[in-house]
Image (tube, rainbow, N blue to C red; front, side):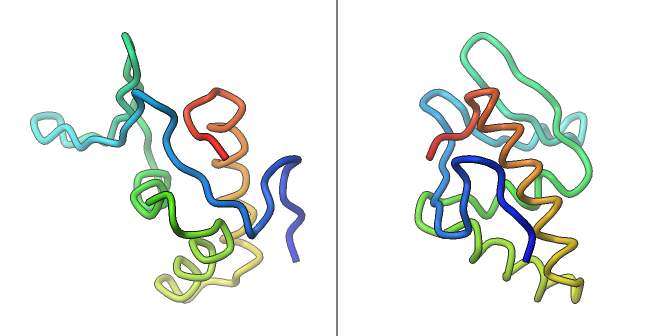
Length: 96
């Protein structure tokens, strides 16, 4: 089992911090996170992962859903998901 970063366990339920949201820019065909007075582009698997954040699903549920959906080893998915969630939590984009 992949070790979760401090503060984030598989039972943790994350959500976007107040004023932050995931949005698809149709004109540029990019996914961005809108935040107060700023926005940043997210790429790769990050948009797909972040679209699963609903404030109800646990980190473990999200990891399992992605592992099933992509027929990928859970450990590989967990490593990527936990790294993304850890980074965005440290930047105060996501909250526990």
